[in-house]
Length: 84
Image 1: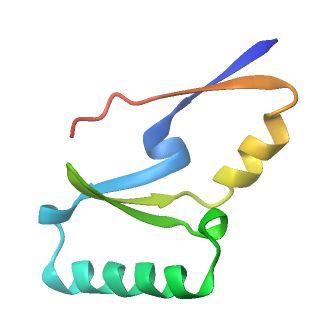
Image 2: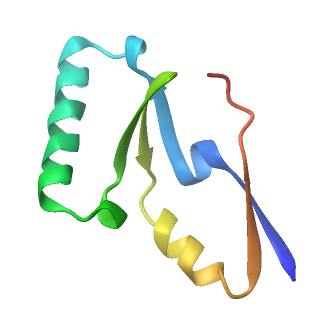
């Protein structure tokens, strides 16, 4: 089987440290995440927050679709050169 190798950020997700956001942006992301939790099943959500390190992650548009389309043709390998 062939490998499909993806750099996690920026190909599949976008991540940002919580401390680098303005207070307004942090509040907006918190509201979006609350709305997603209340209205969407987990597998349909696109915004996530890690607390160690304190980071927000947003799935890129089409990331789930891309992985679903290649799953029978390739083994996906995901790596990150990011710092956190």
